[in-house]
Length: 162
Image 1 (cartoon, one colour):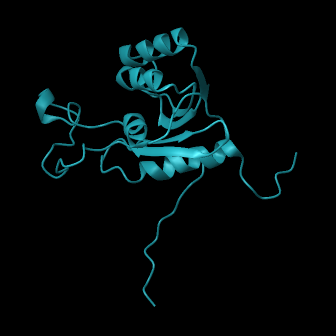
Image 2 (cartoon, rainbow, N blue to C red; image 1 turned 90 degrees about the vertical axis):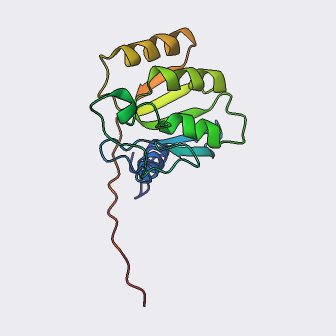
């Protein structure tokens, strides 16, 4: 079926998640999330970053070395931020996310009532965190869909003031 030049709902919502990821200051992994109601209304957005009030210039963004000298104990993931940013009931909603959720985010997703995850990348598929997430999602009957649609590319250029 011809789409007459417009994008699908999945392309639209994954595009919003991709755009949200561009807000992240993480130099190596930018992740975005978009939570959508059953009526296809955006309920919340999130991206990975430091907690509110934490100076992201002071906390390390590195991935290697002693744990407290890396980003891992400090960063809030995109999914958690989207859940915490919402002032809506998320029961029955769908989460579009650019990276498959870790086990910690999986717990928050389950507790919030989200019923489907649509994810773009699954680069940590074989890790314990990802395996635990899948196990919990299956037990909680949360649908996991690997996004197969078109990936929208964004080009950002500075505009001159006229």
